[in-house]
Length: 254
Ligand code: GLU
Image (cartoon, rainbow, N blue to C red; front, side, top):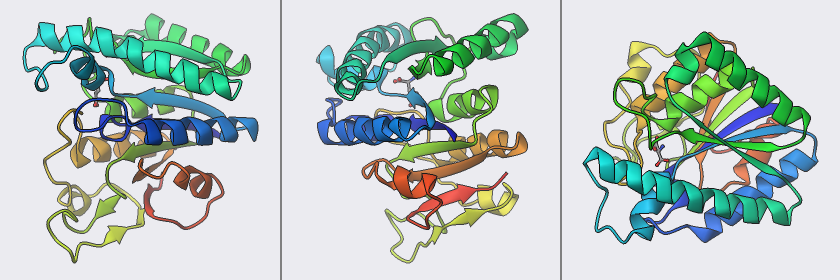
């Protein structure tokens, strides 16, 4: 299977912005194992701004663009350093790709991206993708990595996109506030009723929330790709997903 896995800042970093070592170590281990089993893996990773904030000892998430972009430049290095180190332990080679909206809207750049991805996967590398936050502006940026990962999944013709977040999936209500909220395991079609279930907030250091995840599901599903939302605090859920086992996650069917 060709699987795009998106991991959010809330999984990769603690609230301090510092690396969540347990989550990242487990994630790289499971992804390496899935690659060893013959699956093609593409990782879309957030966390650049969050980690940059921590590394530069900024007191909270910056709101002005130059500081955000500076934080991303610092954090992206840290992120790739960590992935390179951890995936190397399992003998896998990472490749960094930074994209922004115009890389999808410009036909030639998009074609180049597709060709490079194809070649990287043929060469057995593990592409790690993020938005090119240091140069992207409001006019050209994709804006959030849920959407970015859905565009990537469609571009590489993935079988599946998995969004690893700080929530188990889509619920009938907000499980942080409503203890009767139930996990919806299967969604067929992003209807108005489904959209109405999305709350507004995302995490402190990340960008998305349920709305961007449903938009991502729509992009994937419309292009023949299934999407799953699962909890990144337990990366071994990826084994269940790949083996088609029922577990705690929401699957959005194409
Ligand atoms: N590109 C941003 C970062 O790496 C994350 C965007 C998002 O959280 O969706 O910090």
